[in-house]
Length: 392
Ligand SMILES: [Zn+2]
Image (tube, rainbow, N blue to C red; front, side):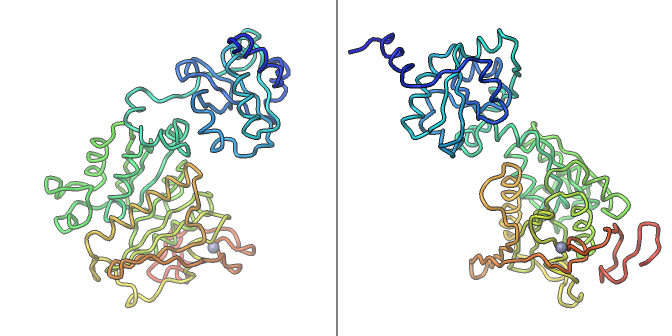
């Protein structure tokens, strides 16, 4: 039986080792893989490196480096664990793998670039443990959620479950736009609020609930009417917008502003026992005007207040909106871009419909003119009123 030294010597014969100087020359084109333990990684890392502790290498490598022909530079603290890791990756079919001699220690001593990674605190690691366990999310994904900003339009039926789940998931900044006050008739479905909050501003009630759920979350409130005069300022800097509004003029206004700013919108709507969800990602898929060039006549589209809505329904639709927002932030799976998911609560069925970009779309089509951010009346398109009061 070979001892450790013989095993290491044999392993080093079976793999390729490169010097830190040669490794640095490959920073731009190779994946750097850090196989140290978390405590070592937290002290400093090579910028852009993928972190998989040696003990999890076999189980996690395929999720983080799926292309087996991609160049990989592995490092540890001194070059021993990375040598064994390189051998393992070769055995798993990775064809362009090298181990960095001298490891992170020599890299750092030679004055090469390194950074201290943003890592979760022990409390956050515990709080988000079920996320960290998912290789598709992990610590890096949780960190990304904590750094992300989602704006919710409305703290009502759809905004309530969406905000609660986004806050629970650790989305670091949640903006909420709502100019309403909590009414007793809201409590049938708007679960951010409660009887003690009746008469209170909805944004203030929402902030209290969300901060109690997760103090990590910075809740930014906009107790204003969302209009042409402020829409561009409000949405600026947000990564994703969750639209829980219930009127057509606001949806068209939001659409035009978000196409202009290239911000994806997770759209949700509810009506009686039915709900719809889709994602408008500017330039990657259709926009709201592609899907609905003109609003339906008012008699065919009564508002929630007039038509009624079953209580649990916004919980389902708003929760799907929250999940789509998280998928967009983490670049996970297939978001509902170009697909409209329709939910029927009475049938208990989901159906997906294709939504295509409209080449004639006045907002995102190839021949669309400059986007005008304007107030719209109930007819939305033909009778637009500009922010300064003039009509077009
Ligand atoms: Zn469009």
